[in-house]
Image: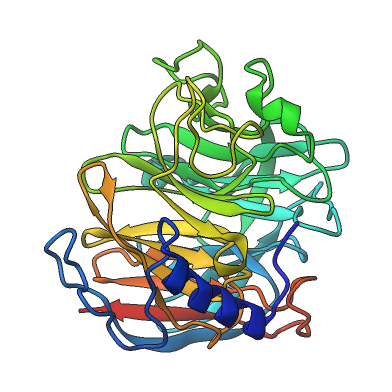
Length: 367
């Protein structure tokens, strides 16, 4: 629900953060490597170059890699899916049926290529429909998408707070982030699948070992849109706060991350505090990727790429890159086999104010 472009606001917030010492507030700006890079983890790999892979996009939202090194990318408002090669060639491969826009944050959202794609050719998608948000499965034969099977329905939707990120974890199960659909009570309701991180089989059933015997893996989330795993298999999540703090959380099975009781650090018994937090004008984090010892968080309203070194379960001092240079940053994903990530913008969304076709996909090289 937050996320308008305002470079003056974000610059002021960065300056304020440097002087107030808020948790997670240390920043660097632009392309220069911040002082003390990698000091928390001993790894010095940081953004060193950025180039445009592809332009002419309108609100690209989800991205998932195919075995051949190309990616499938969703456009939220057109409901289309494109194949994008490393060389920048873009080809439409399908349009997902039954998708509706919420005129806010809903539409065609996350995408996850099956880990068994070579044998099943399945692609999983999360989208808004007429009555709900849902997760569906389609078949991609290498040139077109076909079939449409709902594997999970009944996720409450609203104009805002729809979550939407889906990814297969290292355990082979499908994880999905769901927002509270602007009904904060759902986040604490264990019987609701909203305001949660869900963990399921490829058929949409609760995965074995889930903490409550249901789809729910963790609860107390407001609007989570970023999930990734580090090289030790730990799950990290980026989440929109309300008016005070956005969060970076280390997700563990069955834990409660506080919303709406807490926004940011939480002293309430039974609730888990974030590993890092930002003022909302600095972040609005939509995606998180792990590369070479650090987490990279794409910020919408904050219009920057955050780098957070991690060591074990600890998250080090965040540093900001590309502040206000490329606008609203939506998705970040590690490039397979490369010390690099792809980073997309959504400046053509309703908060960005740019025309259709204004968005880009970049490659950020790390060294």
